[in-house]
Image (tube, rainbow, N blue to C red; front, side, top):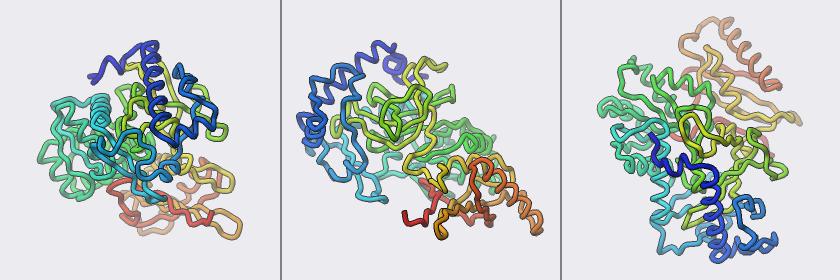
Length: 432
């Protein structure tokens, strides 16, 4: 099932024309109505008349998270507050929050893209969609709620947390699609296992997981534990929310709704374009946003692009999974380390679980990294020699993969804090 065949399966020439037309309109709008962009374009020596084709996007200035914070709440908006239909916001945990307003047309686009994502994962109007993403200022819950409603599915708007109730309603209501973060899905899977529930007897068939990086190994574990097909969904509130990109039956990337959001992949250091298949920083430009259209917003997400017709029938470009974020990357003694790399290693070790915590510190002038790992219940032993062998095995694989010396600490079951939203995987105690 394809939600919008016209836009999702369009030929490249038609898409190029639509993107070019929409980019010209967006640039005209922000130049006229947003002093920030007018000043940035003038500083760069660019006028709206210089933007004729989508390829001219490289002439435009970038927008960063700090720009949004500096403009808080509405100084980047091209629509008046009287036209706002909803306002989302980031938590502001790493600085000032960022406000993200939507007009009613923006919300219609949001619902359409979220519906595309659910359909792309195999959802139909007959499904029961349990949404365990947080509702409120976070875009996940309401975004997928509107998408599921738009496509005619039944919605269980349970939000995050209250795990016992999640599992009870999942069984009582016959949930067929679970939407939440992958780390929370793993917590639900572990609870079902602890209860002795046979997941093959549940109606659950699809998982739509996102909002944090997760590895192929975690995907395989979730599919096995929950007896589902797991699909990735990509979104960020500054651009829209869940549905900017979504996985499909090919399971080899996420299709971008590029009739609304134009993606570029740039070298994070030079900010120059890189070829298809090369990992770089993902940058988005709004093509249809009314309330707060952004030019070349630097997401800090690291991925690559893949053009061409997909086996699912869609022709819109794919990102090949988010490897991590450039600002989540840890540099340990000159080596780049992503939490997702550590997760991949741990999930290949049967004695380890997916519950872990990375602690980075500095002793003198030397960076140190400790990985606290919960052990699979099946391998827990009172014999120190057995635990020591498990620890050596994990350390050996981590050291070999990461090419740095790691300290491994085995911790008791449920020692690592469980997340009911986005997981916290790293504690960095260095004063950088």
